Length: 299
Ligand code: R5P
Image (cartoon, rainbow, N blue to C red; front, side):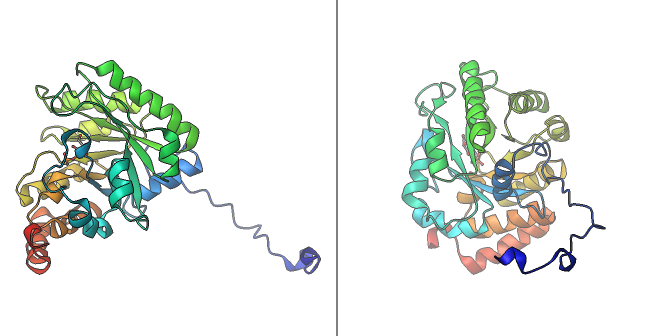
């Protein structure tokens, strides 16, 4: 009978304090349900509004990629520096400790290997399995202008329907075919289509000219893909420019795990993304940490 212990006179309903109404911190995400917002807050750091997502899903079409030959050896030591991890369910189940508490973005499409036409993808995971794995989002590759464009767009819309039903976010990944130009005009087209069709986050490449028009015309957060391995200072400059021009962080793979010193590199990337450290200073930090933590071959 605990309810009878106190009287209304002893209670304080704070009648002079309006109910808190906090806007959700991510662009375009204010009308999402609590579960979806909560999952997005596992990917993006609510303090900075940005993410350092480590992409290690490359094996889904190209096998044991350089730097990912042994995820348990090369990647697990980096987990504490990530806000989120993008990967396949096979690597998640076999190689990532279940104590990992940050965001998991599950590769949700696949099919062709590097030996075939890459745009010929289909859904490669059931939303029920994504739920069982407690992931924050699923990733769908979308090949705008590609041979199987419509199929990949359909993969996205199907996954968005399932994601909305279950509160799992969908990351639309704008894939660029070999002959396609990565200019702002193309990236605007691809990113906007993903967002219009319901993607909650979009991943795209950086372009030197007019990248701010790509982020401005996309109503949901954009994360920058790293692309092929660059010298560390160049990669840090690219990340800095991307967040300066409106990206909500990075989803980088090769420029971290193929770095000579991945642990040093991801820490430098964090400084750039979350604290807007100038690339030159972040590179100094990289070099200092590199001498302290050692290189990839010394793991
Ligand atoms: C490629 O299709 C995968 O989705 C990767 O996650 C993506 O390419 C990002 O990795 P990277 O920074 O190596 O380009």
